[in-house]
Length: 91
Image (cartoon, helix red, strand yellow):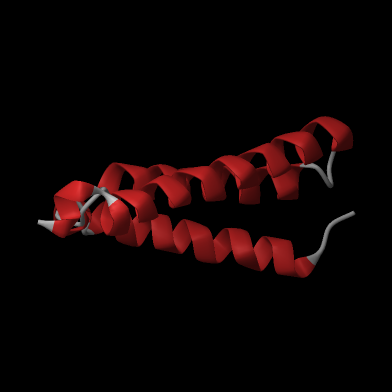
């Protein structure tokens, strides 16, 4: 089943991705950028899978959607650790 909010979320995420690509040099200055960027890519993948699952292979794409959400949260946790709790950030 296709919901309008899923399409809108995909569009907003794609606009955010374009914004990140335009200002990539500035975003690379953020501590732990690669964790944060990976989390965003996992979130983008989840948004894509949630829209595809309404078209065909619902079970497979539903699994991939939730897997990518989980990977997104794990990489966000790693980014938060890198930014706030690592010894390097305390010095």
